Length: 147
Length: 333
Image (cartoon, rainbow over all chains, first blue to last red; front, side):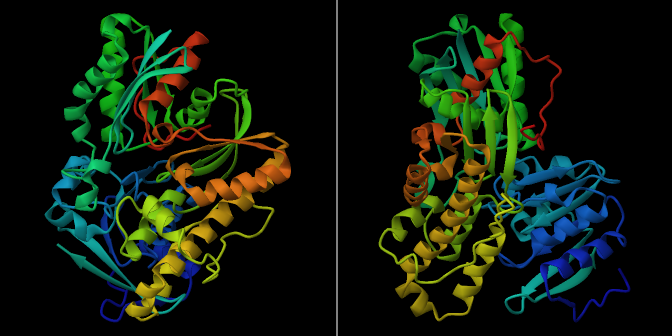
C-alpha cells in the first residue's frame, strides 16, 4: 500500500484501467482485508470489485452489481470475495438487519460499495478507495488506510 | 396436490397455496409498496425481518386459501440465489414444516420460479418457450425445452435491468419504486430527445450491460444546468427507457431467431413496463411469435411461482434432502 500515492490519487482513463488498478491492489492486501469503496453512481466501484475478483482467480463474469441482493459471494478463487453494496440501506442498523455482520468474521476479502451507509458497523481497520468522476471516461481513485 | 410455497430470497416475505402447480388459491406478499411515502423500505430491509414476518404471512396464506397445515400435501421454498440470511428463513421453515408433518419437500431455484410463473398464469402454455427474465436482481434470456431443461442464452454482465431503472429514477429525483415512476413520466416525454448508448450492439452477443447506460444518464445530468434537466425530465426518462428497452428487445429478437421458438414469456418485475411490453409485442407480431406475461403479482418475487415450480418437481416424484443448504450464488444451471 505504501507505494501508492495517497494524497494525489491515480487517474484511470478507462474501465479496463480501473480493473487493472484493482488487480494490482489485490496483490498488496491480505486475504482477510476489508475495503470500503466511496463514490457516486457510475464512478467505477463495481468495476474495481471485478478487478479484485479477477486477480483472486474468480471468473470476472460472475461479478455483478449486488444493489438488489445487497451481498454477492464469489467463491472459487484462491480466496473468497464478498461484495457488499449498501446503496439501498436507509440506516446503518439495516447492516445488521441484512446479516452483514455475519460476514465480518469469515475468511475472505470484503469489498463494500456505499460503505458510508453502513456507519459504525463497518470495521475501522480497513482500506478506503475514493472514486471521483473526472470526465466521461476518466476517474480519480484515492487510496488510504485506517485503523 | 396442494403445495405451500415460501419465498424469502430478498426483500419480499411471501407464502402461497397452489393446487397441482397450476391454480393459485392464495399468494400473500409482504409488499413494500405501502411504504412508498417514506421513499424506500421501512422499517428495515428484509434479511432478519423475514423471521418476524414468516409465521403471520404463512397463516394469512393458509387462511385465504381456506386450508390448514393438515391439508398441505408438500412444501416448497427458495434455496437460492439470494441473500443467505434471508434465504435461510424460508428454507429452514419449509424444511421444519415438511419434517414435522411427514410430507415431501422441494428446494426451488428462484430463477426457475420465475420461469414457472408463466406456466402458472397460462394453463395452456406448452413447455417450450423463450423466457426473458427482467427484474431488480436478474436479467437473462433462457431457452426452455421442457421444464427443467434450460439453455441460458444471455445475461447481464453488470447491473440488472430493474436496478438501472431504480438508479436512474434516483438520479432524476423521481419516487420509489423507480421502474413505475420512469414508466409513467416517460409517457409524456420524447424518447428520441437524447440518444443514450445501446450497450453491446454486436449482434453476435446476446448478453446485456446496463451500467454504461446508467453512467451516461448520470453524466448527462451532471453536465447540464438543473433548470434544463427539470424542464426536460420526461424527455430524459423516456430517452433512458428507450435505450434500456431497445437493448432488451434487440437481444430477445436475436435469441428468438436463433432458437426458432414460437413463444416469448416475459417474467420479473420489469415485465410490468408498458414500453417494454409494447415494443416486444410489435417485434413478436413481426416474427409470428406469441408474447405472454403473468399478472403483476406473479411478476415480482412471490411464493406462488415457487410453489408451482416445487409442485412440478414433486409431481415427478423428485424431492430435496433435508440437508440441502441455502446457496446465495446459485445459478439456473
